[in-house]
Length: 430
Image (tube, rainbow, N blue to C red; front, side, top):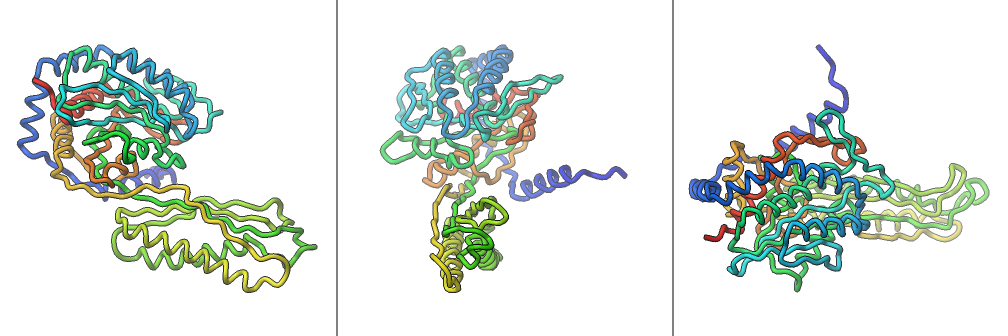
């Protein structure tokens, strides 16, 4: 029997755990009938044909966008390029907001509602990363080719097809290319859109997943901190006895891990992780600082607040306990910096937006699997605004790695899925 590699075992385990958190949803008959009616409209059929014809252009635009580096906080060049693409496709008005999001308004016939559809501009890779797209057989390789650049090209083709097929919707639609979805970007782009006093959005669709049969319908909340212990520093021999931040941090991590483990052992699933640690200058130097970065997650806002309090309490406890034993020189100080906060939220499966999505998936002969994720949808869900994250289709893998790839396997079908999903939510005008 052939042995599985460690990577394969971990990959399969991840899929299993994800599947455990998914729920199969079957669309109600009224929504199935609604989608069948919309999909049979001449303009929708024409739009589907246009999407198929635009396949070479969609692929060309995917490559062009992928080859523009766009780390969080450095998305400007890609944003400007995408803005020009949207303008060329045809839009009623377009602007870049104070956060750096590209926002393009396509007016409906005036029922007063607005649907937002977005894909994020940023990738996880540093600005100096080689993002040249390489074609090997039928596979495109490049950092960020799938996550989330494919979604940008998909959204652009949806807009083109709607324009060329002369589709008018009841609601206004805002096509958005958002900044700061990844990592320490902390959803800053979508947070700005939903900030009080900005745009009024009635429902939201994010494109940021894989298979179109899978939806993110619940937002997994997270809180992240950078914790730093600071001291005077000195030579490991000559200054021995001075306060050592590394030693204090060891105590702090132990205190936190012990208390947090007891806390998460019951109730809604809640997790914690010390993901990064650093500090010090050499093996023979007492460090002047030690830092850790901590990630905590839960679907429950209450549990998330609870584990956040445990972290802060245990860091302060460790500081006091360690400093009580310092006999020489200055005592340690503690710096606490919140570096990320994504609110959580849960939605009912009978929500019209979710039911429409399930009906559209079934129209494309799929089965709907709804699950939990940490995406741009977290923000509207936490505010009580209907939101889902849908897949970008194709076949991809190795996201967030230098050998990320994407294959255009039924890619046009995913774009048709996106168009039908959007038009069904916005309402097709008669």
